[in-house]
Length: 162
Image 1 (cartoon, one colour):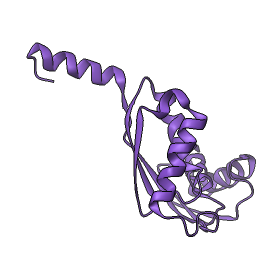
Image 2 (cartoon, one colour):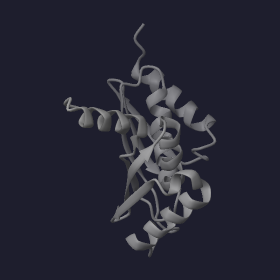
Image 3 (cartoon, rainbow, N blue to C red):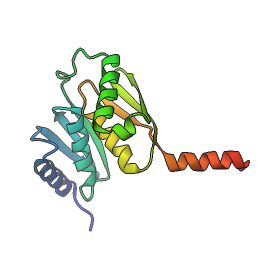
Image 4 (cartoon, helix red, strand yellow):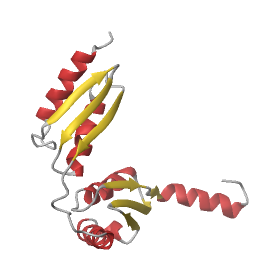
């Protein structure tokens, strides 16, 4: 049975209220053709992304347009070099086993993560640590899995095309 836009909207609103990651952010929810549009102000980029994740998981949601904005008061005045230093310090402090395997590039507050990890949980953990830092506007997670890299290297050395 196909769910109506009204049912999807009501479920998104309830899910946002119930999830502690959103922390009571005042968000508007509109649904058209199953596509959820979120608008309003959140306290951080992490809250913005949590709201998007919540809306995406509601049954009947076919897509999410995320127009949530957040103030940069906690990161105001931080330059890209400051953000890059904060990323490095956070990774070394919170994920010491992975810190040396991950590099970052910061451009206008957007962090690009590169390097290799062993599995998808580590990839998510690195992104989680970085996205909650002051001054981070977004994260492009380009971390690869070490097993994939090893397989490509093996094929390259054997003369077989990857």
